[in-house]
Length: 271
Ligand code: NAP
Image 1 (cartoon, rainbow, N blue to C red):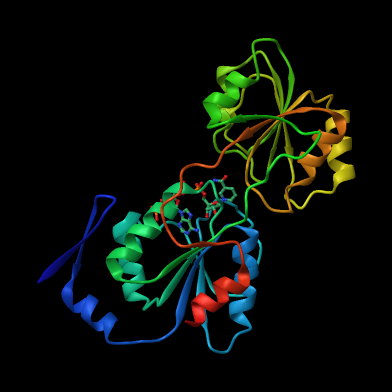
Image 2: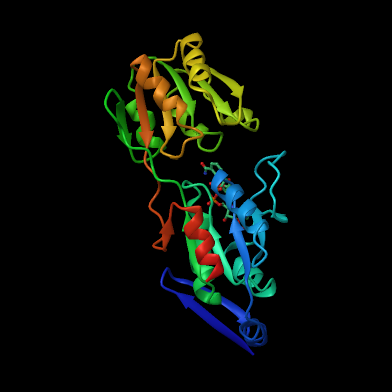
């Protein structure tokens, strides 16, 4: 026999009823941390040090040399909502913390749907977005297409600090000279015609960001509003140099209980 669980974002999942009932019969604490962020790494360290808790961290597998974590890691997609639901049940996960990057919208939506079907409590752990302060020259936009428009028609020297995902959108504005900072090499076909690729993984120091922007004769910065301290130096550097910043807003997020606090996430896991 199979049962169907449906959640209000219109996703339907089929799982065997024996799998679901054996899962419900075993209360325990075993966390799944959806990772790919500094918050996820910090939470993994706290869980590993807490004898009440067990857990696993999940990485998408985008980087070839991921940073080490203090929890066992699984790598790669689950196979959509159905795959994640199955994983939660088969691995007897009691709690999920979605600590993915704020721009990783699909996995967050999948987590919300899968947790609803499997009846597993979900908490979103994310960093607060940056807010502009005096001296900032932000142009707020909703997405990459709007960021491309905000660069204007006249050629400019642009620091693209958006990672490699979505860089192809900037091929629509080939008149600009870009400096793209990435962790992993981008696809050559994704790059605008004039694009210098530099490699780096945060945190970045303010003095280095200022030097990079000066040496690159950068006129405008494009960034996602990722939030957090590790990537903030580029915002400060742009402020100090009087540069415009095209600030891409976060995608709409799934409606789920959310915290910015690792302590709150630990309390949730111990509940
Ligand atoms: P996404 O668009 O939300 O997810 C695409 C697919 O990748 C998901 O449907 C899922 O595949 C898989 N996936 C994503 N995160 C996963 C995780 N933690 N564990 C297992 N599978 C995962 O995600 P994205 O924007 O490509 O980001 C991928 C990863 O990089 C995330 O873990 C995120 O935290 C990290 N990251 C993203 C950004 C960014 O700007 N987007 C920046 C820094 C770090 P299935 O459907 O097959 O399960």
